[in-house]
Structures are given as structure tokens and as C-alpha cells.
Image (cartoon, rainbow, N blue to C red; front, side, top):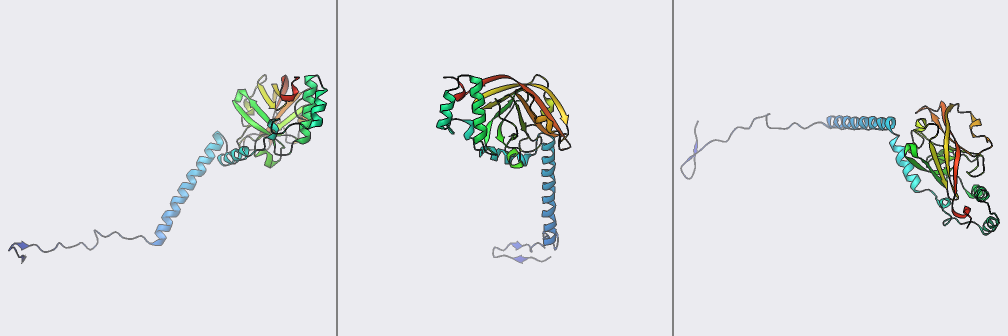
Length: 257
């Protein structure tokens, strides 16, 4: 093979031949790229769905939990403190004439029931056995239960020696009552309203039909009823916790000064 002479007199080798195919990247067609991107989206979506299902089975449904947290942060909590929602003058004057703490609690329970609106926070429920604590709202409609456990409006507020009933979700919206089945006779439930703290001892846990409205009827004594759908992920039944009051501590204006 002949070579060309350079100005320095040295021979310059001919340029290397470039392969026709080996070093050139073949561009993918738009359809191939679309299929690749679609496959990636489907894989990610499937993984997220599996993660969501696993979280729901082991704990609760994540998306509604986030919604519930947002709604709880926006709760109207006026009725958790007399500083934010003081008694009217007439109520204060009437209360001043009552010298028995139990009667003062009953008066305040009736007053509270008159002013509370659907969806407002009315108290805090705590279940030490489950290491759980939630804000209770007024109402058992769908919108109210998305905020937390809801008090049945057709039952009284605590302090009137009657049945107090509260419902809650088990798999969605923070799943406050998910572990009701873990409760046993004698376990404690604490319900704190701004006028008193009520401690209940569980009597029994029972499975009933969705139409068993007898569970919220009065029995002649102060009791608490918690209800939720049963089994998990189904509304075929209701799991119900019955508890009887064991201790009442007056708070705020219920205390005789």
C-alpha cells in the first residue's frame, strides 16, 4: 500500500476505514419508545397497587388515611375547650345554682348537645389496650366518619346515665376501630369531653347484624357502645363493644369551685 509523504518527509498512513454498521446507534422508532414508556408506567402502577393492597391488609388504606389526617387537622375544635366556646350567661347563672357535680355534668351534657353541629369535634377517645387515641366528631354520616370516630346523634352525650354510641371505620380513614376484635372484658376506654372524663370498663364484644339497632337502646345506666363493620373489608356484620362507666372526673365548669 502506498503512503503519502508529509512535509517532514515522513510517510503518513492512510485514514482508517469506518465500519458501515458497528459504530452507529440505531434510533428507536416513536412507536417503540411509546411502548417502552407505557410498559414502565404499567410496572410502576402495578407496584403501587400491590403496595397499597399490602398496606391495607396489614394496617389501613393509605390514601384515605392521608385524607383523614387532613380533615382532622381542619376540624372545628371549639367544643374541646370552654375558652374557645364559653357558656352563655344564662347557662352560667343556671349552673351556679347546681351544687352537685353529677348534676352539673348532666346539665353541661344537655347544653353541649344543643350547640354541637354535625362534623364538629366533641371529645377525645382513648383505648389504652390498643395504644390508640382519636378525636370524636358529632355524626355518623359518611362525611363525619371521614374525620374520625363519630357519635350517634340519636344517643345522648356522656353524663346522662344513658347509652352513648360511637361508630368508626376499620380499614379506611385512619381505621380508628380496626382492632376492636382485640379488646377483652375489663379493658378500659376513656372518653374525655370538655366537662368531664369518663372511664369505661368493657363488658363484652359481640358480632351482630347491620340492622341490630337494639345496641344503642338505653339500659338504665351509663354505658358506651362502639361499633364498626365486620369482618375486615366487609359490611356484612357489625362488631360491637359494650362498656359500662366506672369512673367520672368533672372538668371545667362541672367542678364545684
